[in-house]
Amino acid sequence: MNIYIVGSSSAFATNIANELQKDHNVYKFGRSNLDYTNYSVMKEEFAKYPKPDIVLFNQHISGIGFEDLEVRQSTLDYIIGNNFNNLRDTFYGKIFMYDILKDANTFVFITSSITSNTDPQFGLKQIVYRHLRASEQELMKSIYLEGKNSYALCPGGMDSDPEGFAIKTAKIILKQDKTLNGKVTLVHGYE
Image (cartoon, rainbow, N blue to C red; front, side):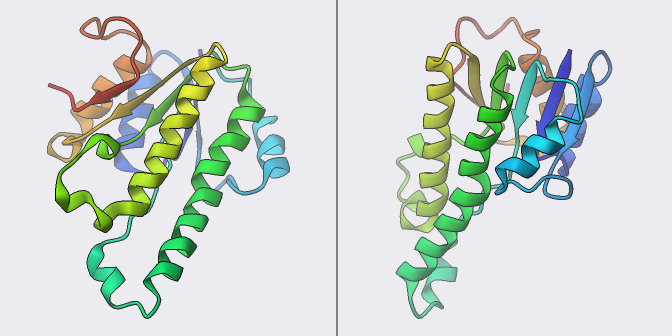
């Protein structure tokens, strides 16, 4: 099986790749070799490799700490600017990639469950991050509605055991984890 990992520079992604490449061909992409904002450049780059069976999106999305907002003269301009840059670089980039790679069977998003969190500490402080993750989850659902296997995994608590979480994530991606039944839409944490 051919697996693309987009957003492959983190230790978490490296551990996922190490697990997956034991039995599969893994191709790693990131900002170092892929311009997320340029459709034609991405299409040209992906054409160099075999078509993927699975595409894993693990791109970084920035949030804004409230303390950062307080030191800005124009908080709204900063939020809008940061949100636009993130939409262009990550969300729209994923739409471009899906359009180019739509023949793949499965699309996996490493995401966050912050969109369902009602804790007040995640209010204004993380509005941009929450907005982008919600947009990403809508994209995931749209891909599913087009008849593709598409789901999101939230590796909350991953810092306690990055390698263990990566191995568990790889098993879920390969559908080897029998503790999950039915269609997976959002998995938060691993026990």
